[in-house]
Image 1 (cartoon, each protein chain N blue to C red):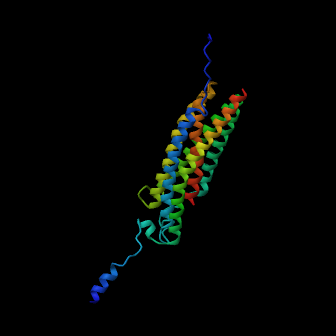
Image 2: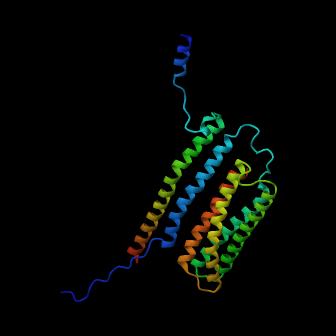
Image 3: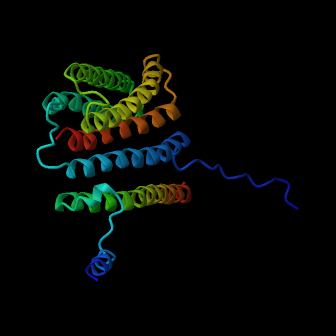
Length: 192
Length: 69
């Protein structure tokens, strides 16, 4: 009769729970955004000749927004680099995480400035179909960016203090990638 | 008799549009409608399938690692 019990095998999750949970959320949110962009695309395509761009309404500042877009894409790239350094245990990862967070803040700040300009020129939520779609789609994205920045800010603080929580880092990173990757689609479809 | 014929002609079937957007009948609108319908139909399948496949690959790689280790 055996005197020792068999040792149970150690089961490790295939992916961190925070990543899987965030991915499920991201799938739902992706459909939400694609639904809005779809409605905008059909509405724009169906506009009678001469009514798009909307007469009397300001044009969306596509060129200026390219700077915001570059800042956001760079932020995503830096976070990818931070992940690579973090996996190798290099402390330099914290610089990239903090830089990514600051670039995210810059993106939201520049978006806010752009909104202030458009509002002063007369483009409001109710001034036209363009205004309604613009503020709804871009505003929802900005809300997601702000939400992701809350988590990314916490992660940055943890990295800066030298005590990063890997679970929180990977979950926040997944959410930030969603914000970063969704933006070019919105930018191309709405601004041009 | 003529008014009866006109009434019957009015009952003849015609295309019915589900909404004002697709009812405009412009080629560009129809194209946008079909394209967005395709995107909205296929994207969730792609997203869920992609995540499922990624999890399967990770799981298979983890299983191989355990067998070696």
